[in-house]
Length: 415
Image (cartoon, rainbow, N blue to C red; front, side, top):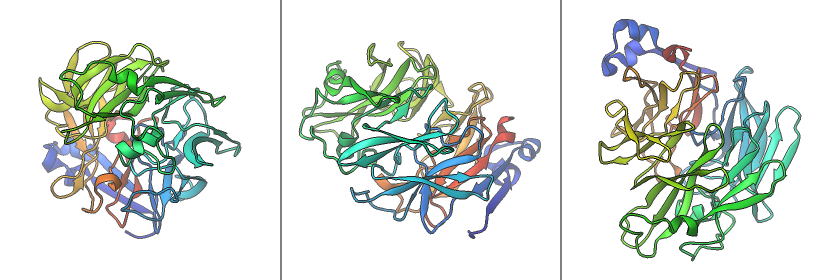
């Protein structure tokens, strides 16, 4: 890989046809263009897959910059946050820094919905986690006194789990530097999920750990189970949100999981998946959730859940057989799924798109992940779509450390 702008154009005819059984015509029509948009000597990545990474006009792509890999962040470690200008030679533009971050989700850097040029990210100042809001055009900056995980579609509200607790219970998802005051409390009553007013910075505790743990779990919780929350996401209209309730106790080899939905104010809690293995998810619409989970009908697969019901439908059981980071490609009427998978036996990671109506899958490339990218500091592809559905950005460590790559999928999905 050189330091010059890197373009890799490969046709599906040569790279994917034999694996996918495509006709020659289909192969010729589906060209994949991959471009490296960040370079060393420092490392760059965006992290999670369910945030807005692209600016509304597709010119800027957000990312994080760090000068080390292969160990857990400490309270002293900081990262730079910035954006890549795709129309100016992939120039890196620094926006600020963060002392509150992790490998899997960065510092929650993302564009604020319903704004043209405002971004947000979490930080640590004076012993507390905070959230910065920056207009990248005017450079006007505000700081809220609380961290934020995800934003409502109108950008007016945020919700957040306890990042202090996550740093102990799920390394790679919390932030170092602020100890959990409930570290020795299995089921706290004064912490859980907070709702934050993004204008005033005021926050309200809307769901507690004790509240969730009081809802019965079939078979009962393990003895001495310690509870936490993770992975929050608003529905498309902002009326409800989803989150994972997790716990681990005596005798548990790994954590257990329940998938909850709730109204935006934390009321009307509903256990959407009670079976203990929910993983990655996204809302399809205001009434359905698309998630990797276990269900007796097909085992570990992707499923479509209808909220507040027990209606469950398997999705892509043959073409999407492995866990990944799933979203819907915008502007495709939820017909195309964007996904990836963890490294296979050859340590290859494969982002891909899948067409639900025709059961057709198109791989977007196969990216080598060296064996030392594992556990907490692994580098998942975490594919993210542009808002018009034409472009995808992934993180990959296949060439001298984690960097970001741009993939044009417009021809494949017909945009």
